[in-house]
Length: 107
Image (cartoon, rainbow, N blue to C red; front, side):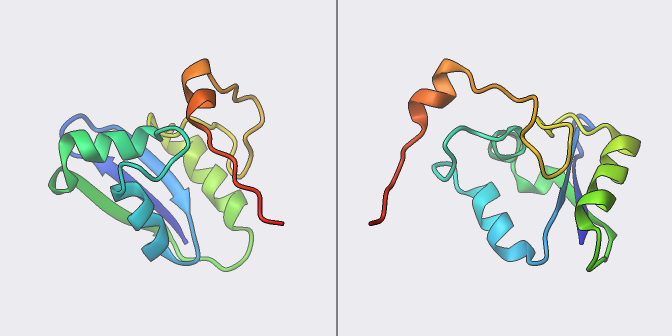
């Protein structure tokens, strides 16, 4: 499914996709869960969940990334750092985010 979080205070949005929203939402609400903070995560912490709406834009089982990109192109969401769905191409970590990365190796 493809979903959209909208900040009801300023109108900014985030487009995402998932087959299971439960673990995704737990990550959004956990202020210590990311290597670096996603904009949507920081916005939810700042504005509180009551100031957001969640819309399921489309239920789909195939071509989810294509559908996510379609909606990103339509809505131009401010909270999406990456502009290409399913790809981190074109994104460069800054020094702060790189210093927060923790690497775990399981041998």
